[in-house]
Image 1 (cartoon, helix red, strand yellow):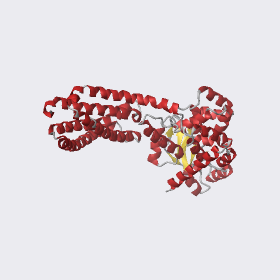
Image 2 (cartoon, rainbow, N blue to C red):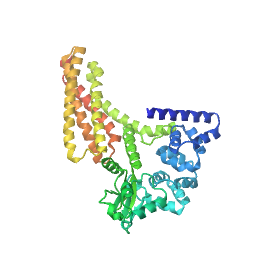
Image 3 (cartoon, rainbow, N blue to C red):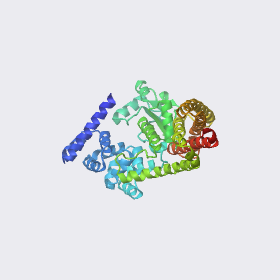
Image 4 (tube, rainbow, N blue to C red):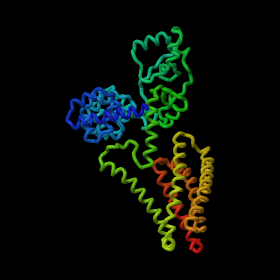
Length: 455
């Protein structure tokens, strides 16, 4: 219900803004944008065609440029950044969190990137260069340096007075980190523990030692798995020496999980997970042509196999009618297995220790499904065409292809993962090719062998 209301509200905002833009009421649109949250402004920009988006961006208050850029998808953000002066972009990134700053700067062309760095003040430039020193998609690249650190020998009373003097804490702060003079992490103190402890106690008396840490070079997907497993709100990031570098918070992890989900969904169609829905037609055509070309090549491979049985199809036209059934069923069965395995790989459920068991299990599922649907299709075809032999042939082909689909649905993503190729991107194309070729060859090859019995 709440999601429906939110969607209706967003649609109402979009319609109202579009109507005002069409009427040339730019001052009214500017006022509307001033009363909207940065996240809503970002959604409005992403929901607008390029021409309207450009006008809207010019009407957005420069004071919230950074907050809006943080909320935008990469494709939309890069399009808007390309229209901004380097100094204006440098001013906008000054208020960004480290992880968002890195994401913006990494998406810039080298020439603009250098200009933006040159336009930053020394503090922001140092912060940006430090954040960019870590590999992309690692804990170091997504961490924030806005941590509150304590010394073990100070009292709770001193800490509380310091926090009151500070006035505010970084967003999503549930833990304060205890370090020594070399910034090596000793432990952590939960805020709840701090405010409920005696004021005369020392920090070392209430800290939790051996706190779980994240190393700066850990890949972000593994970070997300740790947060999910331990129900963390935040976690410290350290280097090889154990020195505290920063922290990762739950909002960063939510972004990682969302991006991974979008990546898996979009990759299966050969699309980039950050692709702009309202990108120009030429740009979208160029991006999609590569994947369509790959699919055309695989389709030609299946057609070449089909061509091997041209003489058989000439003799018995009914085979052409039935030849699409077996590959189709195999493709669906294989896609079910493929999706399950890709998800298992993504969440860390599948590894070398259990891969063989999973392969055997899905092979058995494929055989059982093949048997069930083979019996059904045999009966249907035998009754429909009054030909028991033809029914048995398509049943055999169905059994073979469903078994191959289950086996391939596990083996293909595992092999692609071992070759460091994204299974979500390439798995479905390879699987479809396998099920098409096996299905056609099994059905028409068997039909050719038993042609005299069919006729």
